[in-house]
Length: 602
Image 1 (tube, rainbow, N blue to C red):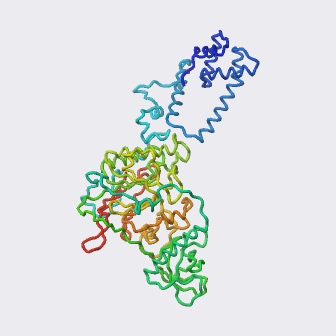
Image 2: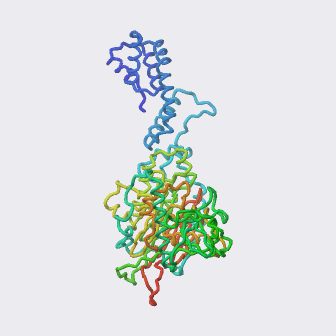
Image 3: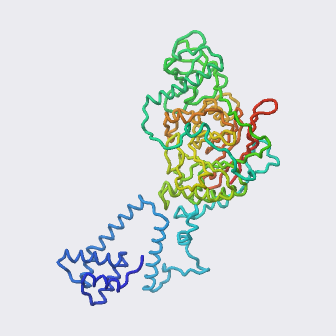
């Protein structure tokens, strides 16, 4: 804010025809303008209004004191109260903060000119090499180029100490397949000629936002019923079962029943609380299940199963055999791929892309450096990009709108990888604060991308199945591993929990087979029926989670948890895969297109 001079005030007084020959009156008005942050014209408007309502008061030192007491002080108090309220509801942009700091510096300079420096005074230090400008001023009065960097989204731009001091950068923590002598670089022209699309085309995929919160219980029941009937028919055909009996019909012989696993209360599922709920064709009733005779089992709420056992009273089923689900077939390409073609390098990373104690995007900048170094053909980047669980976002300490932070974050990725030319795939997350909080989640909208940028960028929903050079990738950013780990019960299976859950996903043919879902997942069941199911078993399944990273082969599908790029205040991990499309070997058996994979520390 420019300082008001006596000459400006005199011009304004002359314009209104107010006589003023006393310089002390002008000095007093200049002082009031500075103290109450008024321009010359604002000061005169306030004075004329006050004078007119008080029978044309003359302009003197005494009347100015009276004017200050009755008008200016009250105006300042109400303005401060408004600013206090507004600070909680409005996000300032970076330029507003610059203006405020400049105004503060001008006031400090003016006050310093009138005051005598005392010992321990708060006078501004001169900016010299020995006394550099404060970090706050340096960060916010930076060049326009720096303002566009992801490190300027927060007023607290101090980099995370724990992240910058992390150890083990570039350390490989998980290895899958034969990696000896592997060169983790893309093809000669990364991204060029890569065929990347949603499986089934746009018409069979969720490609735009939709209206939600209009579900009826009847519609949800219909979706669940159809799921039971569809999976039940597949199980009946596969295991050559003649027919299913009603679950609550008393019978002295062994019966085979179809239903969905659920819990008898609101608590966590356990071996004593298992119920089997049948579809309408089998009576639609619930019956408790005794699992004591089963040597091994793995169950979770929402799982569609076929059980064999005795139900002598019609009130409890004593299960003696459990039929597991059957996964769908893999994708078979009708186009003959060249076997001598170079392997495709795919990089997979999942947010958050900032440490929890700072909104500086240092991990993202490090990831961009890795992309430039390794030159992958495809980068699968999963949200959250603007994490709703970040401390500074929860406390409303950001300096821009969430949409602006996200747009600049994406622009930084797209522009930063321009020299590489790789294909970029962006997957939204339930934790992206600026996006629709619903599952299935529609893709991001980026209307500001240029035509050249849009050719490299693919925006997909969560979940989705991608077809990349004849290889199918199942992708979801929702932490289904974490959600199902808390609900699944097992006995005598001999396999690890991750493998069991992943197998459940593939045999239940769903990206989110858990029912009811956890509280933080808002499920739209009609859209979920259309866009949340697997139409085939993917060659590669990407399932990022808060749980420990891994790469596993589960019933022929390579399942990858790349971990998160940041874990709290420290660095996390990302994953890289080498993909060679070849459907069959010499003896006719299917060969996994994933040659090798690694999980690497950022």
